Structure formats: structure tokens, C-alpha cells
Image (cartoon, rainbow, N blue to C red; front, side, top):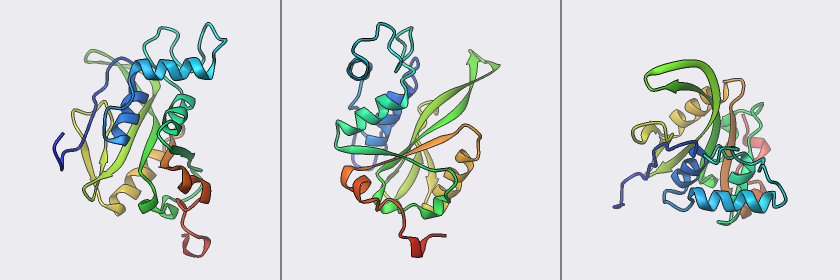
Length: 184
């Protein structure tokens, strides 16, 4: 990948958690095998691992994402949707991983079912990108104002959740959140 390019993995099987991790890190770090190893460490005695699909096709849960980030010296901070995204201190946040509802399709036919889907958002070269693995490529969101609008829209969905990806020290001191006096 040359300088200025945006790394973007595309959807394969039910591996959106792996794609979201790699997209937020902007490099291929995690594979199905590394995620499966994390699952085994999280539940070593379980025959049917609760952190992934019983079919072995992926569909990893948040515990796998959090453990994967921790292995890289990062932390995943749950965002309280009752707060305004205006309170985010964006220069302290490496990226975002969202869990959003997603339509299920069979080929070109959209089924009346909804599943959960992990996607990544992060800044690259001064612009924020939607790095959803279901997209054909990275989608430029724009600057901070557009990012905050995008995140607000995504979080307005009933079952959407957001993780902030930050350095461990940033998680420890809470500086991903603006100080009280500057919050809106």
C-alpha cells in the first residue's frame, strides 16, 4: 500500500469483525485463525464457543474485538449513546468500530431479516472514511463536522453501538472525552 492510499478489506463470509479491526488499524493484522485463537483463549473449556458462529464462519462478538485490540496496546471504549458525539475529543481517538443492523440478502434478493454488522471508521490523511467491508471501497465522510453527523446518524438506529479505538493510556486517563467545561 503506497502512502496516501486507504486500506480497505472487503467482506468475506461472516468476518466483518476481522475486517473492521484491520480497516481501523489500516493494515492486515488479524485473520480468521488469529480470531479463532482469541475465541479459544476466551472460552478454553467450551465445545461450542460463545464468541463466534457455531458454523465456524466468523460472526465474532465484541469480546474478540476487545481482546484483539488489547493485543496491540489499544483499548475499545464503549460509547454511551446518551452522550452527544460533540463531546468526543477526536484527536485522541484512533478510530471507531460500530455494530449496526444490516439487511440480509441472498444474491440480489433482500430478505426481511436483519443481522448485526461490524464496520470501521477512521481518519486517513486528514479525512474520515467509512471503511465498511460491505462497501466496494472506502467512502470518504469528510472532516470532523461530517464525521459527527455520520456517527449521530448511525447511532440513531435502535440497536447500533459504537466502540472508540484508543491507545491504552488514553483509555486510562479518559482524555477521549472533552473536559466537562467544554462539553456541549
